[in-house]
Length: 206
Image (cartoon, rainbow, N blue to C red; front, top):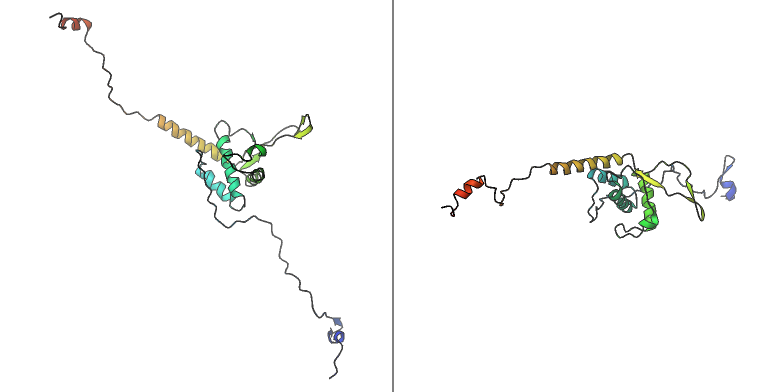
């Protein structure tokens, strides 16, 4: 049997076919890069005197679950709430300096971790940037410098802090209005006898 040349043997109905065809990868639709962490997140409240209200803690933990730096973000959120969620300060804006917050003993976060935590807290809505007027820059001896960014609590978290402050104030007021138990006094009661009667019944008069 006569063997045909390889090129002629692979020729089918006038169309040429390659001996080895390139395998094209299966193209899947592009998906957004999500920082998914499958492990459950049970944040620690730390050993300090401050504790986040339960409603805020649960909401914050659920929002931070997909992020890799959730522990750092939760620590920074609790640090911010400790100093700025008080009734007299919650409506005010506050400025965070990454260099000042880095390596604090009560926070224990590096400057890079603080930067990433702020970015995540903005993304989940725990922090919002305060509305400012005028120029974003200020004049200094070294030229124009960008003004520090002022933050406020997000629209979903600020009302929750206000409600928690109201409950705490009501609880303190309720305790202060409790009636104190009556205890017998050991101090001598003033005598109701008139001074004249005391003089008549005294031993010297007898």
